[in-house]
Image (tube, rainbow, N blue to C red; front, side, top):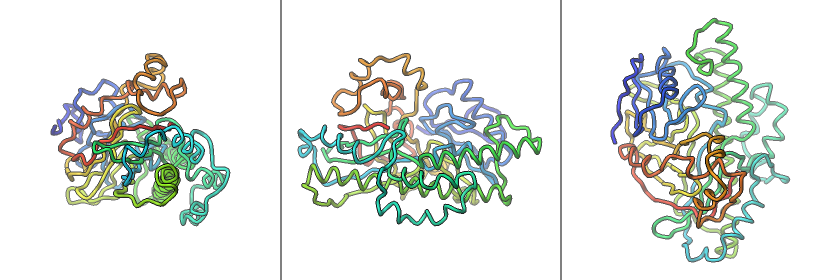
Length: 393
């Protein structure tokens, strides 16, 4: 489906790949962003677009000489990692429960941290820059070290999946943990304080921004890049442990050679070249999809997921959706669905089936097939996956 230009009468047009009309709150949020004077060319909305904080989740915002910390969000560098293994479905027979049990033992979830620090973690080059980060996070260094290689909560997950040829894939979703959140909160607060002090009238306080060339911009950009690197490496550490668990059960501990590896952000900002200019591109719940990029678009814990290759669509700033996108809030999902619904919707998946994950029920998300149909001009599907084990954060 090609994009539709929304009828919003904003200085910057809003192009939408969503197959549905925006609700009034969503339309207001899109208008707010598209009205900012530093927004470049147009705003692009992905097929999974839904309400966020300040800006819509599923929006791609290119800006000249300014950046909005709340648009990047508090889980800086959140994203996906996937590995295609040489194993097949037959090798998983009778091993799903033990694999899940060992994964839960190897990778801390929720608020849990690592009790012991891997050498890989302590050797990470990023620790050298920690002293340069925002003064208010300096007391969090040891916590950041202990959380490196942990999943977190919410919609973060670890999955063993099968593709349509019965190949085994390993997939996980996580970000920059507490340290990324803390850094984001510090800078969002600073941006709001500056806007207030300067008497800047914003359509939404969460659209407070930093202007390039100021010390505040430089400090945020430095911390942002560090947190994005932390998130990327966090996924590498977890995937290494994930591989070892699967190798133990499927190959007697013998190391395997991955057939394909993908590690991509979907909450981040980068300096990129678009329409003849260097601009800052913020992807808030969107994946980069240049022709050379592989991406991962997960469904919910009972639905299909997709490994994709980008088509380099310039109007989307070479982007695609980051998932199915929520249909209803977490609280609404808990009110609407029962435990029996969860059990039914996650049939055939070795996973938790308790009230603690009810807000992540597949029915709380948009149908992933529709989301994929709406972005046929953004990506091509390389593999379609269905999970058989799911560990939730």
